[in-house]
Amino acid sequence: MPPPRLPAKLEQLPRVALAHLPTPLEPMANLTRHVGGAQMLVKRDDCTGLAMGGNKIRQLEFYLGDALSREADALLITGAVQSNFVRSAIAGGNRLGMQSHVQLERRVERDDHLYATSGNVLLDHLLGATIHHYPDGEDEAGADRQLESIAAELRNDGHRPYVIHLAPGHAPLGALGYVLAAEELVQQAQSKALVFDEVVVASGSGHTHAGLLFGLRWLACPAVVTGVCVRRDATQQRERILTRTHEIAELLEVDNPVTADDIVLTDAFLAPGYGRVSDGTRDAISLAARHESLLVDPVYTGKVMAATLKRATETDATIVFVHTGGTPALFAYQQELAE
Ligand SMILES: *Cc1c(COP(=O)(O)O)cnc(C)c1O
Image 1 (cartoon, protein in one colour):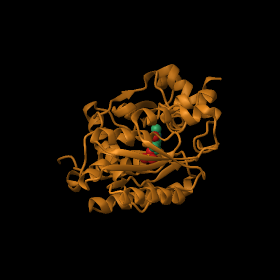
Image 2 (spheres, helix red, strand yellow):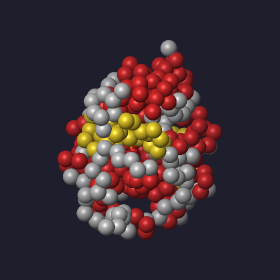
Image 3 (cartoon, rainbow, N blue to C red):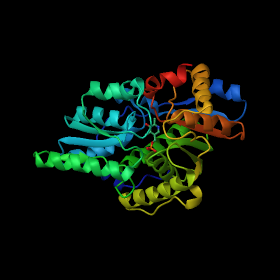
């Protein structure tokens, strides 16, 4: 039987090449030895290349493809102050000759100098975007409304703005990058003659989690995909991921291969909340650095690493940790991490 192929529609949607692909799939031999449980591998999506990489580069290939097909000349996006997506979007926009207007939301109650100016914020300035602020804290709908009003102003001035919308209800173009990543992962594993039983990945906006899960199930790969909650609790996130997979199916004009039972989430590593570091996360960051020289971040991948290490003690399965990037944020969290 020939291997299953991804839905044909995926090839027809506009996409621009931005990422260095395929990213490596590497063993974490030292950590595996240290923990003494499951065999652990890492999918190096921190190595996607563009302006310090991460998972948003695969996602942007579809958003910016869409933007180009609409002849947009300006890019708009909203995110946390230390958002990797904002930094990556500006970088992608630069490559395509689009100016960026970004909105930084005060999702984390911090105003200290490092958080406000270092890490991704420094890169936002270097890459050269117009920076707006949304001071009201966690408010997805409010932040989207303010972004729309910036887009309206640009339209009034004769521009053709393109808004990258991450909330449910908008086509999850970014998830398509991870449907493709699922195929890349399956092919890499096959070429290395290895079988992976579980994948552990951050679940934030849910594009990465939903896209990977969709792609793996479409390709008949039965690996358990555990989403590690980084922003919302597991109950809220479950709804979001299920909705996302339906939206992906709609976009690709196929039936959804993902069932409610496929959606596995843990919010055990979320505390003390979005963008805040627990002792467990700090330990995971340190272990990954000391044993593997892998730099994981305080907001996303440190929590996912903590979840992976815990899971490794519970099973003798083969686990793939998805390193979605975020390394620049380390420098904004110097105070929490260096003590
Ligand atoms: C955005 C981000 C995530 C979460 O990805 P989603 O697709 O939004 O769920 C995970 N890790 C890093 C480093 C990120 O920047």
